[in-house]
Image (cartoon, rainbow over all chains, first blue to last red; front, top):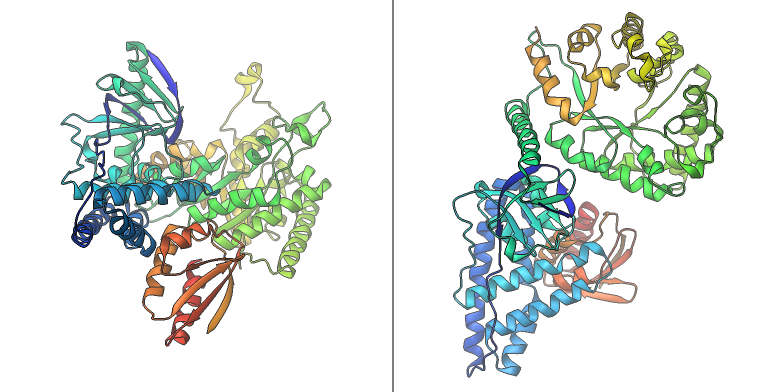
Length: 538
Length: 85
């Protein structure tokens, strides 16, 4: 067994035979020609054919990966018609009397170089597009067809690099995964792999001699495992069976409404902890994001994340989810989540201590930076903001004053923000639940955080195994509070969701629907199982 | 000659696809359309040259248009940039 670590593009698992994809040895030879104009006619014909082929690929890609991802082939067609590129080829042919294949390959190389020298990562990644189109034309000129035959049995494809056109041309039904040495998560090939939902790894030094060996691609860990032992394989087979089951469930349930037999609808949103989770959120057909934990930005950093850093992350989430709601929870640090630069004093009772909104209201500069980033991101999608650990009306009013001031500041600076940003609070303390009728007058929505609500209601630290026998997740005291909070929300005309672990508790789905809960936010993996339950209810 | 300035709002700047569409748009007109940024410039019809300017978000670019259909061209290009970049 050998293990190799790379970077994962798509979280999924595959097991199968490795197939090393050797680029067609299309070594272009330099030849001297006699008739430059005739050579240019040859070039033009090949270019015309290449553009036709790209049109076919474009149409194939539209069907397989959607129009947005297919557009790269339209751009490839335009690149082939670029004036500077063509002039460089004519010039080489005419002045050096070289064959068209050579002129194309050499021009392709020098243009690709110009892009790989650029500073911008996105532009650097474009050099592969130029090589791709040049190789296509050179291939046509030398009468060579680039179609790689990967055989009948589905395989894990190994390659030094894959051009977008190569990726799309491959027969998808015979592909289990991609593993390449080069490439970036920005490359179109990576985007295509994600859209095709194939496990894909980059940054692994693939070797031709691996061809024919059996391997596992673990997209969750970014690992390629050659000749996995029986024991490990059994584990992966199990996970793959689960994966398959989930996919089948997905096929049946994707695009379906979360509606009961009698027509009661509920929103199913996803909980996420970082941008990496977005792919599985989309894949599992979430109606929105019900809880985006913004802590990772703080926990992964060595110093306070800047407004700009935060803005980019929130904006990307908003854009990815398009018009779907993205509810971002403001900083919930303290207790078990510590970042050294906050320099928080050790406490006797951290769970009852200096955490979450309490930090935000006393260190307002940290709070304001985050709010500026959040409101700026709201111009790019449907962003909502959620405040954690609320216990009093006073706190909510202070938050609203700060939020209002931050919005006004942004408007004064001429920075666009969303027209209607929903602002809600988490109900995760018994205090908030008991005064939820008052709190409902002040905010746009409630989201019940059942983990903390249960801990504070039952006075039980869930981390302590000695207390397991006393811990009752379905305690009547917790359920009554949930019911009361939902009723108080509806009386005030606002909506109420649940974003804690109980939201995914399948035995409570029916109860929550009866309480009139409007939204359940669960991890992406639980989404479709809950949808299934909802659809089976009366 | 007509000209307008524009600040790029797109997060990745003038990337491949809008550059391609911009080039396509410019080819609809006879006028010569030049995009300038910080002293460097490119013909809008030339996709690769345009991409090589490496125009990023918040960069201010100036587009100058000169030719018999410059009025229509400048209008179309400015609208295109507002909508796509």
